Image (tube, rainbow, N blue to C red; front, side, top):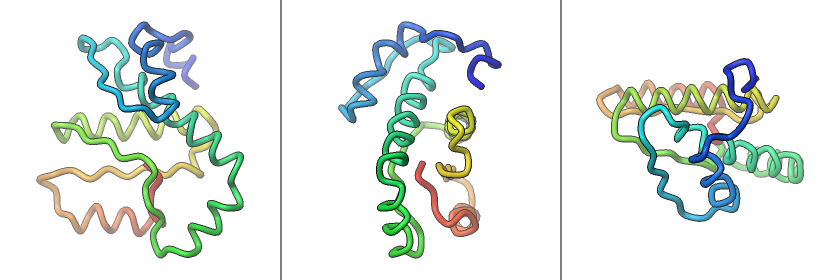
Length: 130
């Protein structure tokens, strides 16, 4: 859980970002290193996806059946391979903390790595929401 990692309340950057991200508005989140920026957008995005899952679970199942690989609902771009991998781990952790680990699949694709590896990972999971 988030509490197991010492996250018991939102930090200022997370409070500022919550409504903006949850309501799907454009956001630029700027804050010093180690102040909670990643969770500032990861937690509200996962919360939004979980709400959508609960409300439209049957519709999403039908949409998934129509495609060979489901379309992602969240795409995050980052400037370095290390940051991309960190963000991927955070999305997986938060999805698990929300009890949605099996419903919200994440995939990481990085420059400088063979594209076939990323594609194979997506196919093995049946696509990814994040």
